[in-house]
Image 1 (cartoon, each protein chain N blue to C red):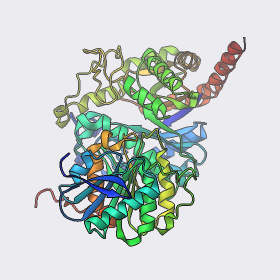
Image 2: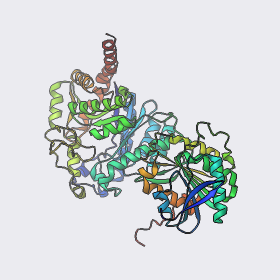
Image 3: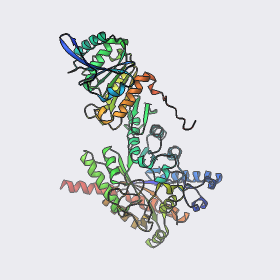
Image 4: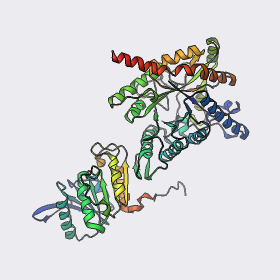
Length: 198
Length: 388
């Protein structure tokens, strides 16, 4: 795969991609191939990290080593589905290093109490939490828990999408994530002009 | 069975009705007549409540004197002040062309102002109306569906949220006040097509059918109930509304004379297909006969099967006769369709104001009390049959 790299972390191989330039976006995925990452790489430096089974301690250790290796100290973090737990744990551990957090259809155990011990209140980074309105894997209403516990949470529903938002509504996903990474909290402001004929 | 009074807020002078085409130029609207029309409509709503109607209804329409309720929530807000017991029913806002978050906010306010008596139905609109706010007619079905889902979310979400839709994007939604009726007021979807009836079932909306003849209403309600059953729920009769015209006279003979002269909304809609509205391709309407199959909600075209048989079901005086006859007709209609709420209008082109008033009076005093038990009897019979 283009731009694919491998580093050794504690005897294990950690595979990652590094594409684009600009602010760093760390994208946790079970597999490296990802259309959203490709799209975001137009405007950001996207480091896609293959995190395998997504077990939080292992992921966090691997990410720490990778970031040191790359000399990256501040970054945005994106995770989908089951990898959200690892991303949340990393965001809590890493404090201000994580400038923005994006959770796409998170199956984090937060809503059902399985991850009640996660100190979400410690997350200071603006956090975008996305759910498809037709998600059958995890109720979209789970986003309310994040909205209540993370001070700068932006809980957003993607209309007519199931759990795999990247497949069901790819343009919508790129649009909202791209705007959030670019503007952070100010993505709620309409930046595009509504003038029809100046 | 329940009855809803469709309060049209019609302009009380014939002059603008003689204009051929849509929109009707605002120059026809005289301030004094306009003010009198609104006062008359609100007084009419009050009388309907006193006469025992269960709901007082209004709906959104644009640029025409027959239905001066361009913003039905404003009119409904006025209704909440004069109608003290009956439900206030917006049947409905044209959600294909308005801001759905604004609509949700307005519905929430109306539920508050009415003390939890709001009923709402989501409408797509007619093709001429799409010109009012410049929406693409081809997109209105999908816009209506998305808007309806967004409105429900906006009414029920306890946390601020964003919406990334196909037609609507809002990054911050947090509707205040919350609705009094939890989780939300009774909601309906316009179901004049098979597709819309399916959508209503999918989303647990009640179904609103308008003007079609009984056998086509039955086709739609039957399809709707089947689709509900597939999804594991069963609508109650109150979740089936039918909007129509009613003509009641002392005798069948007198009523039939009214029927022969009645042209109802058909004439008005036919006029709306002229003028600028012709640009959106309203189908030719045969006002002399009822449609033979269901079309789509907004344009009277049936993309699946119809090559001219469908159309708007404006019909005529669907229920017409002496009080005894009308009670019988409504009972048979209920048996056929399962509809539990009749949303009725008594006016229409071709009738004198006195005839419309007499219809209203006879319906209120001699029909309404006798149709109350219709659904109940059916329910009992059905229950007995099921028990056997």
